[in-house]
Image 1 (cartoon, rainbow, N blue to C red):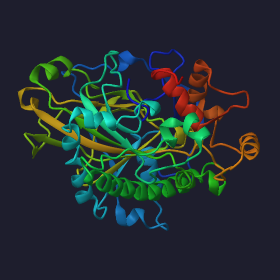
Image 2 (tube, rainbow, N blue to C red):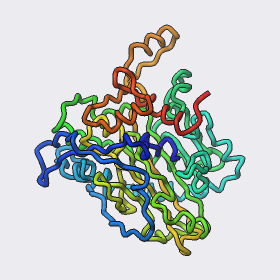
Image 3 (cartoon, rainbow, N blue to C red):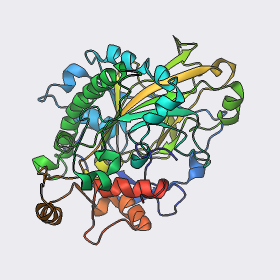
Image 4 (cartoon, rainbow, N blue to C red):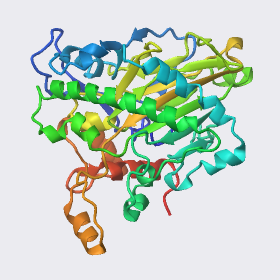
Length: 432
């Protein structure tokens, strides 16, 4: 299975899994249309299995220039709907972002150096308490086959806050978010600087994307200012960056997994709010090269059930909608299942791949007040409100899947912290 940051709660084998469709007119409407409950389809894991001989279309992501994105008076509703709406791919990309090309290169070039550190050094960077969602992780996740994923190594950190909280209760309750960053200060000190610089830039641009998403959604549903995606991300301390390094594979490995559309990253739907992505960097013998296989890359399952390859430029930041945003937007912004296909063939042998993702997510608490005594803490825990995921009847896909997993409390709400930790309990070992 993919890690917490890539694993959706969606069970593609479940007969209860259905995708929510919305009706969208060809012309740009003055407001998003209401969800249509009568249209649904069933997805199974078999529907996502395609051989390498199956011709699949390649689609360019919707692009928004940075100068337009930063203009709060610009009406980007049409592009937001085209990329994130019910008929979109759930992804769009931002072009011409200042400093991004150099910051991307600085960090991605460090991934191979990190992976090459001595095993005892990498061991010190592991954090089992967080289920390896801070620091170094290799072989701790499971592939779709159930085998340990030895193809890639990951380094996780919050690029905005080194220590989100010192509260012992919160650290024990939400270890995957409330733990502290672990940096290789002696072995690779430049990693911290590069990781934070790129993560902060992707976050800042992501806030601009979130602002325009709110403008689009607010045309179709009532929401308070503090309920919008931008404010949810601003007040959160849960954001997590993931630097990924795919080890050079031998030809036999590529031949074994090459027909799979998800041979590098299994089919999943991001469970957070908004994911920022860089284009991958490929190297052979530490020399940067182009991707050796044109069929390799990011594949997305559209709302109509079609599998397409999505592409964006190496100097663009791509953003994907997560399931939490689909829930909170009542289906006006839609998340899509996706996977990553590895290159195959002789030219792919000995090639490594580096990339970075920033997972922007709600906070575990809305109330930011801290409690110093046990009495205050108990009073706080019983009276404060967590970041709640409230389920609209229109977004019944999530509610039915949650009911399947028996996660929904009686008041039809679930905190993001509870949501995430329960996913970890299901797909990893439970906390003891």
